[in-house]
Length: 155
Image (cartoon, rainbow, N blue to C red; front, side, top):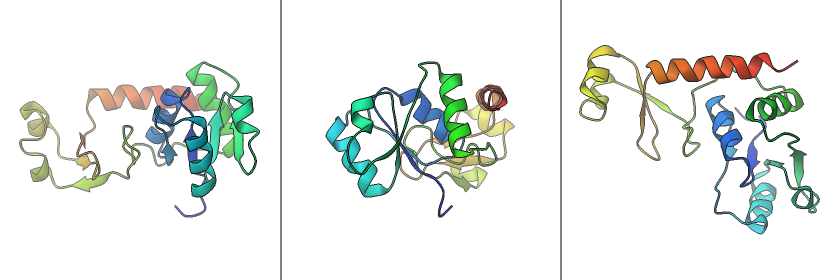
């Protein structure tokens, strides 16, 4: 994934950050970061700053995109269009902490997921940072449908 765009979303764009992660894009976000920390991290890590704050985006040395809308669907469409994003690597990152998910054997999920989930699923992913398990259940299906809806809005 070298050479791919990496994002940093400011405090107003937490939901967008989550959905960019679900799409599989490296998106740093922490609502606790102030503008100075956001700018420092974006510069130091070579990230594209996504913001609804014109003053923040005007800071020297930042590469950024002003996110026009407050509506998630429109935000995802704008960022996807601006950077040519695709849904091919969806569900490869933890939507909570941004780490790359790892496929794990089913036995690793024993006692970590609900018994019904363990009995009815064979594939599991684990976030190595926050130790959350993921599987393709009904919540995943709903998220996939939302992703398809979001990506259909990209011209």
